[in-house]
Length: 119
Image 1 (cartoon, rainbow, N blue to C red):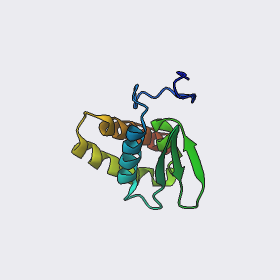
Image 2: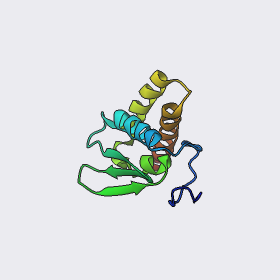
Image 3: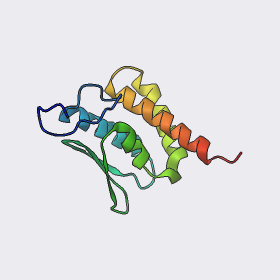
């Protein structure tokens, strides 16, 4: 907690020192755009202290970091999500908050696919 607003600020390498509502909205829009092609796409909403991820079944996860958002997404659609992330990464480039959000999502999705693959 920095003391200015009285809320806990969770360290998030993607957000850096810019934990503003505007940046949280940008993150929510980026993840929502990527997930639009995923079956049962969740709804992501920016909150003052993080994000809420609402699944197709109505369950809600409160997320404090961008990594938490990606981890809250359904595992069963990881390959579809990976393809959507790869396409977005090509279009996004490598600079800016949206690019960092997409890069982290792609990294975490690849890890999910590797963990779930038979050896």
